[in-house]
Each structure stands twice: as C-alpha cells, then as structure tokens.
Length: 203
Image 1 (cartoon, rainbow, N blue to C red):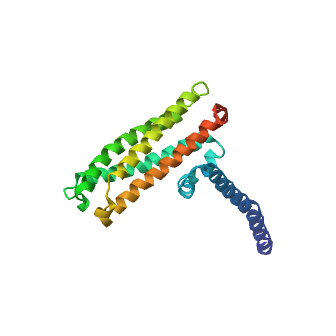
Image 2: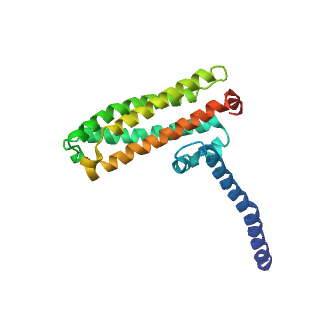
Image 3: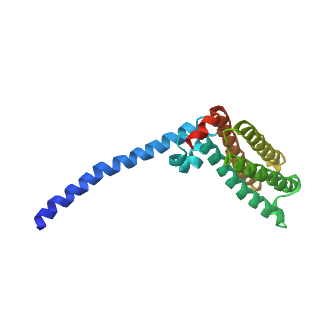
C-alpha cells in the first residue's frame, strides 16, 4: 500500500501542477494585458499601470469600470495629500516652511477641498451612468475632473522650490503625484466618452 501511495501521490501532484499553474499564469497575463490596454491612452502610463493593476480582472475591457477605477485612485491619493496639507497648516512651525511657501500651503488646503468635492461628484455620477443620460453625465464628469486638475496645478504654482529647498520638495512631489493620477483619470474618462453608451450594456 505504501508503495502504491508513493507512486500515486507524486503523479497527482504533477497533474495538479500542469493543470493549475498555467491557468494561474494565464490569468496574470490577461490581467496585465487589460491594464496595459486601458492605460495606453494615459500620459503617465507606468503610474497608471501600478495604481490600477488591482482592477484588471474586474474591469477587463470595460471603459466605464476603468474610468471609475481611475477616479477612485486619484480621489484616494487626493485625500491623503489633503490630510497632509491640513496637518502642515495646523502645525505652528508649518513643518519649518516659511514665507511664500507657508501661504501656499494654506492656499493648497482650499484647492484640495475643491479637488475632493469635484472628484467625489465625478465618482458618484460614474457609478450611476445610464444609456439615456450618458452624454450629459460624461460631459459633467469631464468638467469636474478637469476642474480638480486645475485646482491641483494652482496649488503647485504657489510654491517657490528654490527658496523652500528640501522642506518643500517632498510636498511638491506629493501634490504632483495627485496631478498625474488625476490626469490619468481624465484620459480614461475621455476614452469612456469615445466608447459611448454601448459600453454600459456589458456592465
């Protein structure tokens, strides 16, 4: 009996490896293909692929789902940066940020309040898209996400990196990352607009 098991068990394991592992690899390759195809329209492709890869196997080739995913990750990152900015503003030393840059932090807090409002509204509408109102809904979302991007750029314009040095650079990098994600989201929304309401019929 022991000899029988010593033959059968390795054989079963080999069959399992042959049947399961290729299918798993295939799924990973398909997911990678989905996100790369979706991100092909974006300006910051590497960031798009990294941030949206978790959505690959659910979004697949659906422009509506990719647009929602793009806005979702931009919104999440904008929330993190908004909290960071608010903390800097509350701190008495402002993270040792002085002069014009200190004022810029305060202005950025207001800019990000608008950014969050516009991204929240956009995500809400993207989740409620309908065939009948598709055109007006997507137009609204394009307007709101574009406004969010403008607010983020306005925030960046207020900083003087030369005078702020190493204290300001990390802040600029964080805000810039949000602008890149928002830009990618806008590109995915424009791709959705091009696809038209027909894409909603597939989920």
